[in-house]
Amino acid sequence: MPNAFTFHLIGTDGAARRGEVVTPHGRVQTPAFMPVGTQATVKALTPDEVARTGAEIVLGNTYHLMLRPGAERIARLGGLHKFMNWPHPILTDSGGFQVMSLSELRKIDEKAVTFRSHLDGAMVELSPERAVEIQTLLGADIVMQLDECVRLPAKRDEIERAMQLSLRWAERCKRAFESAPPARALFAIVQGGDDSALRVDSARALAAMDFQGYAIGGLAVGEPQDVMLAMIETVMPHLPAERPHYLMGVGTPDDLIEAVARGIDMFDCVMPTRNGRHGLAYTRFGPVNLRNARHTDDPRPLDADSGYPATRTYSRAYLHHLMKANEILGSMLISAINLAYYQSLMRGMREAIEGKRFEDFRSETKARWARGDIEPFAP
Image: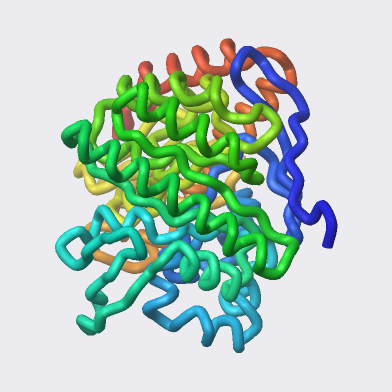
């Protein structure tokens, strides 16, 4: 299927970019936020509800899906799209983050990462070639290279070792991908921790390999926001402008706006759903902790002017009650409300970039957050 994956840059405003990704399963408007569906599900939400929040693409995870239910089983059942009833685009993370987060359960050498499964203790090997094979079996529209992510802060020699290994693995992933079925895209991942020189070396080497897209990995792993943003600014001039730029695992609404201002096109993060399950709602007025007792008698919705029905329908008092009572519906509603807000934020940025008013949008949005919630409820 020729040209099954393309990226079209529609417009720019400063460094901010407005584009469109075309995949075999549909189009994705960028800047885009991808809800995280690690185990073939966005937690607490049906696929239809995820789509109703405005999401056009979701993320699945190679490590978790290869352990349970298994990539070969998903392939026999028709692929990940059919398996999870999500007919839209899917990006699959290669498992590189688990190389870091499950460090006590793995060992790394040139050939592969060897894991001890967190489920049953079985030893499992994940090589660059196997990572591509698994993602191909899943049927992902966007396949990620296997890399090694280092938690920050870390010593420079450790960051450089992991970055160089990730470059060698990128070459192996590309060779494996080129022999896999067509109609997919392979993204490389820039590593280098918080070291500008290593980030530039990684970006330049990967750009020379000519991938369909480029991710920046290994950020939002312990460093402050200003360091993350500095690394984005360092890397961006060395990535091909005609390819999509993806910042992995980020982040807060403020992170999204600041990263878009520096040229990022795609994001994923567990934050809106994870925090939603704990009662933290994201709104135009900033975050609202619905576990707080001040919401007990508040009959107002989170945002009466929201375009998402649940945000303007359910009272703060009811959402507070659901969380205090540990009712599943609370997690479902607030997770959906959060994803809808994230999608609304992305949509606002896209419109602002097209209208050449991104800086106004950025400042107005931040000013609204700084002012805080609507007037306190006075019973």
